[in-house]
Image 1: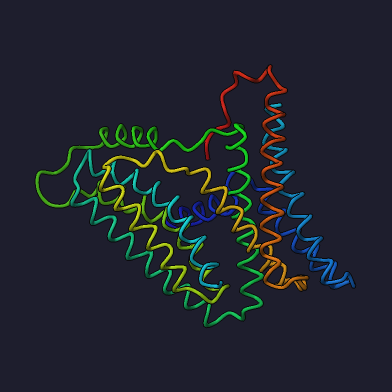
Image 2: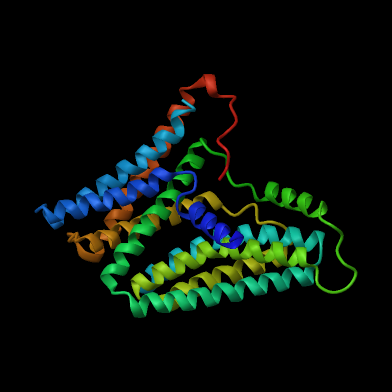
Length: 70
Length: 256
Protein backbone atom coordinates (compact mmCIF):
# COMPACT_ATOMS: atom_id res chain seq x y z
CA UNK A 1 0.00 0.00 0.00
CA UNK A 2 2.88 2.35 0.87
CA UNK A 3 4.48 1.68 -2.54
CA UNK A 4 1.17 2.27 -4.32
CA UNK A 5 0.78 5.59 -2.52
CA UNK A 6 4.36 6.56 -3.38
CA UNK A 7 3.76 5.54 -7.01
CA UNK A 8 0.62 7.68 -7.13
CA UNK A 9 2.43 10.61 -5.49
CA UNK A 10 5.22 10.36 -8.05
CA UNK A 11 2.82 10.57 -11.00
CA UNK A 12 0.83 13.36 -9.33
CA UNK A 13 4.00 15.37 -8.83
CA UNK A 14 5.23 14.45 -12.31
CA UNK A 15 2.13 15.48 -14.30
CA UNK A 16 0.31 17.92 -12.03
CA UNK A 17 2.84 19.23 -9.51
CA UNK A 18 2.40 22.82 -8.39
CA UNK A 19 0.63 23.91 -11.59
CA UNK A 20 -2.61 21.88 -11.73
CA UNK A 21 -4.15 24.42 -14.14
CA UNK A 22 -1.76 23.22 -16.85
CA UNK A 23 -2.92 19.61 -16.44
CA UNK A 24 -6.63 20.42 -16.43
CA UNK A 25 -6.29 23.23 -18.98
CA UNK A 26 -4.45 21.07 -21.54
CA UNK A 27 -7.16 18.42 -21.40
CA UNK A 28 -9.89 21.08 -21.71
CA UNK A 29 -8.10 22.73 -24.67
CA UNK A 30 -7.76 19.44 -26.55
CA UNK A 31 -11.40 18.55 -25.81
CA UNK A 32 -12.53 21.97 -27.09
CA UNK A 33 -10.59 21.61 -30.34
CA UNK A 34 -11.89 18.06 -30.84
CA UNK A 35 -15.44 19.34 -30.23
CA UNK A 36 -14.96 22.29 -32.60
CA UNK A 37 -13.80 19.97 -35.40
CA UNK A 38 -16.69 17.61 -34.76
CA UNK A 39 -19.30 20.38 -35.01
CA UNK A 40 -17.93 21.51 -38.36
CA UNK A 41 -14.99 23.83 -37.61
CA UNK A 42 -12.37 23.63 -40.35
CA UNK A 43 -9.62 21.11 -39.36
CA UNK A 44 -7.01 23.48 -40.84
CA UNK A 45 -8.26 26.49 -38.85
CA UNK A 46 -8.45 24.24 -35.77
CA UNK A 47 -4.64 24.12 -35.80
CA UNK A 48 -4.58 27.87 -35.29
CA UNK A 49 -7.24 27.60 -32.58
CA UNK A 50 -5.24 24.94 -30.74
CA UNK A 51 -2.05 27.03 -30.88
CA UNK A 52 -3.84 30.14 -29.57
CA UNK A 53 -5.54 28.20 -26.74
CA UNK A 54 -2.19 26.68 -25.66
CA UNK A 55 -0.65 30.18 -25.57
CA UNK A 56 -3.62 31.49 -23.55
CA UNK A 57 -3.28 28.58 -21.11
CA UNK A 58 0.45 29.23 -20.61
CA UNK A 59 -0.23 32.94 -20.21
CA UNK A 60 -2.89 32.33 -17.56
CA UNK A 61 -0.58 30.01 -15.64
CA UNK A 62 2.25 32.58 -15.68
CA UNK A 63 -0.18 35.33 -14.70
CA UNK A 64 -1.48 33.30 -11.74
CA UNK A 65 2.10 32.51 -10.60
CA UNK A 66 3.18 36.17 -10.68
CA UNK A 67 -0.11 37.74 -9.50
CA UNK A 68 0.69 37.34 -5.82
CA UNK A 69 4.06 39.05 -6.20
CA UNK A 70 2.81 42.07 -8.13
CA UNK B 1 14.79 14.63 -39.69
CA UNK B 2 12.90 12.06 -37.57
CA UNK B 3 16.20 10.97 -36.05
CA UNK B 4 16.92 14.50 -34.86
CA UNK B 5 13.29 14.94 -33.71
CA UNK B 6 13.61 11.92 -31.44
CA UNK B 7 17.22 12.27 -30.32
CA UNK B 8 17.64 16.00 -29.59
CA UNK B 9 14.87 16.53 -26.96
CA UNK B 10 15.90 13.28 -25.24
CA UNK B 11 19.54 14.42 -25.25
CA UNK B 12 18.83 17.91 -23.82
CA UNK B 13 16.30 16.72 -21.23
CA UNK B 14 18.68 13.96 -20.18
CA UNK B 15 21.51 16.41 -19.57
CA UNK B 16 19.28 18.38 -17.18
CA UNK B 17 18.07 15.30 -15.30
CA UNK B 18 21.44 13.55 -15.17
CA UNK B 19 23.12 16.69 -13.81
CA UNK B 20 20.56 16.59 -10.96
CA UNK B 21 21.14 12.85 -10.43
CA UNK B 22 24.92 13.37 -10.44
CA UNK B 23 24.61 15.87 -7.57
CA UNK B 24 22.87 13.26 -5.41
CA UNK B 25 25.28 10.47 -6.39
CA UNK B 26 28.36 12.62 -5.68
CA UNK B 27 26.99 13.70 -2.29
CA UNK B 28 26.30 10.08 -1.26
CA UNK B 29 29.57 8.71 -2.65
CA UNK B 30 31.75 11.39 -1.07
CA UNK B 31 30.16 11.21 2.40
CA UNK B 32 29.47 7.47 2.63
CA UNK B 33 30.65 4.60 0.43
CA UNK B 34 31.35 4.67 -3.31
CA UNK B 35 30.91 0.92 -3.93
CA UNK B 36 27.31 0.76 -2.60
CA UNK B 37 26.50 4.08 -4.26
CA UNK B 38 27.65 2.84 -7.67
CA UNK B 39 25.76 -0.44 -7.24
CA UNK B 40 22.64 1.67 -6.53
CA UNK B 41 23.27 3.72 -9.68
CA UNK B 42 23.76 0.57 -11.78
CA UNK B 43 20.56 -0.99 -10.40
CA UNK B 44 18.56 2.15 -11.24
CA UNK B 45 20.00 2.28 -14.77
CA UNK B 46 19.02 -1.38 -15.35
CA UNK B 47 15.45 -0.66 -14.14
CA UNK B 48 15.24 2.36 -16.46
CA UNK B 49 16.51 0.39 -19.48
CA UNK B 50 13.92 -2.34 -18.80
CA UNK B 51 11.13 0.26 -18.42
CA UNK B 52 12.08 2.00 -21.69
CA UNK B 53 12.36 -1.32 -23.51
CA UNK B 54 9.09 -2.76 -22.21
CA UNK B 55 6.89 0.34 -22.35
CA UNK B 56 8.47 1.69 -25.54
CA UNK B 57 8.03 -1.59 -27.42
CA UNK B 58 4.53 -2.14 -26.01
CA UNK B 59 3.42 1.33 -27.11
CA UNK B 60 4.88 0.97 -30.61
CA UNK B 61 3.54 -2.55 -31.14
CA UNK B 62 0.14 -2.43 -29.44
CA UNK B 63 -1.26 1.11 -29.70
CA UNK B 64 -2.45 2.56 -33.03
CA UNK B 65 -0.37 5.59 -34.05
CA UNK B 66 -3.37 8.00 -34.03
CA UNK B 67 -4.28 7.08 -30.44
CA UNK B 68 -0.63 7.12 -29.45
CA UNK B 69 -0.12 10.63 -30.81
CA UNK B 70 -3.24 11.97 -29.10
CA UNK B 71 -2.35 10.53 -25.68
CA UNK B 72 1.40 11.12 -25.96
CA UNK B 73 0.85 14.58 -27.47
CA UNK B 74 -1.47 15.47 -24.58
CA UNK B 75 1.09 14.33 -22.03
CA UNK B 76 3.86 16.23 -23.82
CA UNK B 77 1.79 19.43 -23.88
CA UNK B 78 1.16 19.12 -20.11
CA UNK B 79 4.76 18.23 -19.31
CA UNK B 80 6.28 20.67 -21.80
CA UNK B 81 4.17 23.58 -20.51
CA UNK B 82 5.25 22.77 -16.93
CA UNK B 83 8.93 22.97 -17.91
CA UNK B 84 8.35 26.05 -20.05
CA UNK B 85 6.31 28.02 -17.49
CA UNK B 86 8.89 27.28 -14.77
CA UNK B 87 11.75 28.28 -17.10
CA UNK B 88 9.96 31.54 -18.02
CA UNK B 89 9.37 32.38 -14.34
CA UNK B 90 13.02 31.59 -13.50
CA UNK B 91 14.37 33.59 -16.46
CA UNK B 92 12.22 36.56 -15.41
CA UNK B 93 13.33 36.33 -11.78
CA UNK B 94 9.94 35.33 -10.36
CA UNK B 95 11.21 31.92 -9.22
CA UNK B 96 14.55 30.90 -7.76
CA UNK B 97 16.93 29.03 -10.06
CA UNK B 98 18.01 25.47 -9.46
CA UNK B 99 21.29 25.69 -7.50
CA UNK B 100 23.21 22.41 -7.76
CA UNK B 101 25.92 23.61 -5.33
CA UNK B 102 23.32 24.38 -2.62
CA UNK B 103 21.50 21.09 -3.24
CA UNK B 104 24.86 19.27 -2.97
CA UNK B 105 25.55 20.88 0.42
CA UNK B 106 22.03 19.97 1.64
CA UNK B 107 22.48 16.35 0.51
CA UNK B 108 25.88 16.11 2.25
CA UNK B 109 24.41 17.52 5.48
CA UNK B 110 21.53 15.00 5.29
CA UNK B 111 23.95 12.10 4.69
CA UNK B 112 26.05 13.08 7.72
CA UNK B 113 22.99 12.74 9.95
CA UNK B 114 22.51 9.10 8.89
CA UNK B 115 23.96 6.19 10.94
CA UNK B 116 27.68 5.45 10.25
CA UNK B 117 28.75 3.35 7.26
CA UNK B 118 29.11 -0.36 8.19
CA UNK B 119 32.74 -1.51 8.37
CA UNK B 120 32.15 -4.36 5.91
CA UNK B 121 29.63 -5.24 3.20
CA UNK B 122 26.92 -3.13 1.61
CA UNK B 123 25.92 0.29 2.90
CA UNK B 124 22.20 0.16 2.19
CA UNK B 125 21.72 3.87 2.84
CA UNK B 126 24.18 4.73 0.05
CA UNK B 127 22.54 2.17 -2.22
CA UNK B 128 18.98 3.36 -1.53
CA UNK B 129 19.65 7.09 -1.85
CA UNK B 130 21.65 6.66 -5.07
CA UNK B 131 19.08 4.20 -6.49
CA UNK B 132 16.14 6.50 -5.69
CA UNK B 133 17.90 9.62 -6.95
CA UNK B 134 18.89 8.12 -10.30
CA UNK B 135 15.56 6.32 -10.74
CA UNK B 136 13.42 9.39 -10.03
CA UNK B 137 15.46 11.75 -12.22
CA UNK B 138 15.78 9.01 -14.84
CA UNK B 139 12.01 8.41 -14.92
CA UNK B 140 11.56 11.83 -16.52
CA UNK B 141 14.16 10.89 -19.13
CA UNK B 142 12.44 7.54 -19.67
CA UNK B 143 9.10 9.30 -20.14
CA UNK B 144 10.53 11.61 -22.81
CA UNK B 145 12.44 8.80 -24.54
CA UNK B 146 9.40 6.51 -24.64
CA UNK B 147 6.91 9.21 -25.75
CA UNK B 148 9.15 10.82 -28.36
CA UNK B 149 10.56 7.53 -29.55
CA UNK B 150 7.16 5.90 -29.89
CA UNK B 151 5.42 8.85 -31.57
CA UNK B 152 8.21 9.53 -34.03
CA UNK B 153 8.81 5.78 -34.51
CA UNK B 154 12.42 6.33 -33.41
CA UNK B 155 12.84 4.62 -30.04
CA UNK B 156 16.49 3.75 -30.86
CA UNK B 157 17.67 7.33 -31.62
CA UNK B 158 15.75 8.69 -28.60
CA UNK B 159 17.45 6.13 -26.34
CA UNK B 160 20.79 6.95 -27.97
CA UNK B 161 20.30 10.68 -27.29
CA UNK B 162 19.65 9.95 -23.62
CA UNK B 163 22.57 7.51 -23.36
CA UNK B 164 25.04 9.96 -24.93
CA UNK B 165 23.85 12.67 -22.50
CA UNK B 166 24.25 10.27 -19.57
CA UNK B 167 27.80 9.31 -20.59
CA UNK B 168 28.72 12.97 -21.18
CA UNK B 169 27.48 14.07 -17.73
CA UNK B 170 29.18 11.07 -16.10
CA UNK B 171 32.55 11.82 -17.79
CA UNK B 172 32.44 15.50 -16.86
CA UNK B 173 31.32 14.58 -13.33
CA UNK B 174 34.21 12.12 -12.91
CA UNK B 175 36.64 14.71 -14.30
CA UNK B 176 35.59 17.64 -12.11
CA UNK B 177 34.42 15.55 -9.13
CA UNK B 178 31.87 18.12 -7.98
CA UNK B 179 28.31 19.10 -8.91
CA UNK B 180 27.94 20.62 -12.36
CA UNK B 181 26.71 23.99 -11.15
CA UNK B 182 27.80 25.79 -14.33
CA UNK B 183 25.52 23.88 -16.69
CA UNK B 184 22.98 26.44 -17.98
CA UNK B 185 20.16 24.37 -16.57
CA UNK B 186 17.39 26.92 -16.97
CA UNK B 187 18.39 27.57 -20.59
CA UNK B 188 18.23 23.84 -21.29
CA UNK B 189 14.87 23.55 -19.53
CA UNK B 190 13.59 26.48 -21.57
CA UNK B 191 14.65 24.75 -24.79
CA UNK B 192 13.27 21.34 -23.78
CA UNK B 193 10.00 22.94 -22.64
CA UNK B 194 9.68 24.62 -26.04
CA UNK B 195 10.40 21.36 -27.88
CA UNK B 196 7.99 19.26 -25.79
CA UNK B 197 5.23 21.86 -26.14
CA UNK B 198 5.81 22.13 -29.90
CA UNK B 199 5.75 18.39 -30.58
CA UNK B 200 2.96 17.83 -28.06
CA UNK B 201 0.77 20.45 -29.73
CA UNK B 202 1.52 19.01 -33.17
CA UNK B 203 0.86 15.36 -32.28
CA UNK B 204 -2.11 15.99 -29.99
CA UNK B 205 -3.56 18.24 -32.72
CA UNK B 206 -3.27 15.41 -35.23
CA UNK B 207 -4.88 13.13 -32.66
CA UNK B 208 -7.99 15.33 -32.29
CA UNK B 209 -8.31 15.79 -36.06
CA UNK B 210 -6.33 18.96 -36.86
CA UNK B 211 -5.07 19.17 -40.44
CA UNK B 212 -1.79 21.10 -40.06
CA UNK B 213 -1.54 23.52 -42.93
CA UNK B 214 2.13 22.88 -43.77
CA UNK B 215 2.30 19.26 -42.65
CA UNK B 216 5.57 18.46 -40.79
CA UNK B 217 6.97 21.92 -41.60
CA UNK B 218 4.33 23.31 -39.22
CA UNK B 219 6.63 22.12 -36.41
CA UNK B 220 9.08 24.91 -37.25
CA UNK B 221 6.30 27.52 -37.26
CA UNK B 222 4.94 26.26 -33.91
CA UNK B 223 8.44 26.29 -32.41
CA UNK B 224 8.97 29.87 -33.60
CA UNK B 225 5.57 31.03 -32.25
CA UNK B 226 6.13 29.43 -28.84
CA UNK B 227 9.69 30.79 -28.65
CA UNK B 228 8.63 34.36 -29.44
CA UNK B 229 5.65 34.17 -27.06
CA UNK B 230 7.92 32.81 -24.28
CA UNK B 231 10.50 35.56 -24.72
CA UNK B 232 7.72 38.16 -24.65
CA UNK B 233 6.39 36.51 -21.46
CA UNK B 234 9.84 36.77 -19.81
CA UNK B 235 10.01 40.46 -20.75
CA UNK B 236 6.47 41.17 -19.45
CA UNK B 237 7.02 39.36 -16.13
CA UNK B 238 10.35 41.15 -15.60
CA UNK B 239 8.68 44.51 -16.19
CA UNK B 240 5.85 43.59 -13.79
CA UNK B 241 8.32 42.62 -11.08
CA UNK B 242 10.31 45.82 -11.56
CA UNK B 243 7.12 47.88 -11.36
CA UNK B 244 6.27 46.36 -7.97
CA UNK B 245 8.98 47.84 -5.68
CA UNK B 246 6.94 47.08 -2.55
CA UNK B 247 7.68 43.40 -3.11
CA UNK B 248 11.31 43.88 -4.16
CA UNK B 249 12.67 42.45 -0.92
CA UNK B 250 10.32 39.47 -0.84
CA UNK B 251 11.97 36.07 -1.20
CA UNK B 252 11.53 34.39 -4.55
CA UNK B 253 8.88 31.74 -5.03
CA UNK B 254 9.98 28.41 -3.62
CA UNK B 255 11.67 26.12 -6.06
CA UNK B 256 9.73 23.06 -7.21
